[in-house]
Length: 368
Ligand code: GLY
Image 1 (tube, rainbow, N blue to C red):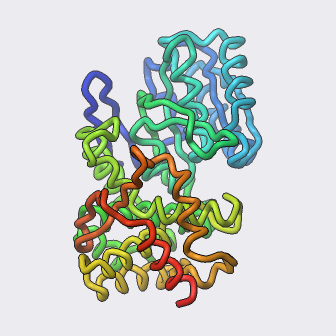
Image 2 (tube, rainbow, N blue to C red; image 1 turned 180 degrees about the vertical axis):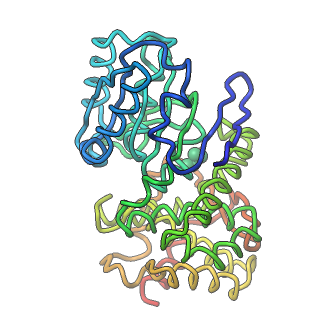
């Protein structure tokens, strides 16, 4: 097992990564669970898979789970489910010093974290991420949010969890497509700042995805440590450092928007394609070499992910994709910063990108 500290000033916490952690939930959370009833927010799929294990683990330590079970899927990150969840927490008489448990993927973590941030002006929560994407990205760093008709994650708060418990056993039943989508965020840490870790992904990614437990622990622990370092240095994304975690996200956001934020393209699949596009666009600008950009695309193709947007059947031109980008929450005083790459492991924030150039580039990629 690995324990990674996230040393945020005034609110440090630990991320535990390993097998068999969920049955030890009460032991690891320790005195954070200070009452008999423990409020747990989850979704219907995770509840069906994990509730009996959690109930037993809590009962053995003299606790009882109070479950709030939301429908699975992105639609639960809504004002309605937020309000209903907050009302439920109030009915459960949750106090500021209590810890709410978010047991699920990114949707549950984001919604529960936001509810915790506003309940009684801020109470504690524990992230128990059940997807690879949530384990390596969304459960760490304190970004919480819901979606509104105006866009995804536009309403939320920075609110750090008190503890993160990433049980690798939960990945064993994850559909391969979801595992791959989460893997994009693992590769991201190599591409943005650690060329040796990208090499590790090329060497071991396939075996990790196939189920090798040691490799899974290495992948998740390394990713969490990389994110912890960035979040410690730039918690509120004001210094241009945390923004590097958005590598691939601006291009990916346009692809997700064009596919209606649907099952046609999962977030991580959009991020993988977005990182390939960011690398190719960087190569077009004479930054990274074309060979390095090809190497990135080849790795995603090797593990079974789409690496060409021409295969998505998007039925649009480059200008339409750029139009989606203008609604991106990363817009800043009328300009859109892009994370580009000087090399594998050397991402940087470019604030001088001409969107007409991006539209031409995307048009070429759509017909490649
Ligand atoms: N997922 C990007 C971040 O946490 O900053």
